[in-house]
Length: 214
Image (cartoon, rainbow, N blue to C red):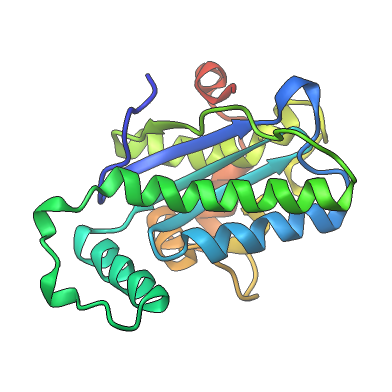
């Protein structure tokens, strides 16, 4: 079941699809720009655990930060726009977590779509109307979801082996390059890089297929 709202400290499977059979990514640079914009707009509102980008849709696994961190970022954004803004006058009870987090994701999606349209001389909407999200309610589902997100290009026939698809977070947990991912958290979750890799060698639970589809 889809979640109506974002709530602090909850983990979500977030996904969306291009409209009317369009593509979200045409050139390799599109994938890189998407990730840059995702990091730019959402790194202070959520911790990213996994992602998969495919030509016409994407999947993310992320946990919304705690209320204190969200409000601190809210103040930072306010002060950037108005140097006279005083956080001491802020009433925490009026803070709308969902609205603030959703705005960051909308800024991200809108910014990417505008850049995509300019680059390809295109007009109109790019993403489907609603950013879909589901709450990840238990540890077993969390573990299997990381696996299935990385396996999704195989499921959709874009490659035969998850190692062959470059635009997932799978590889980022197996090297030391800088990444926006919460790499240490995920590797500790699996126990070690070796256990993480071993877990991905099996075929994921087929029952997750319906949960993953956009």
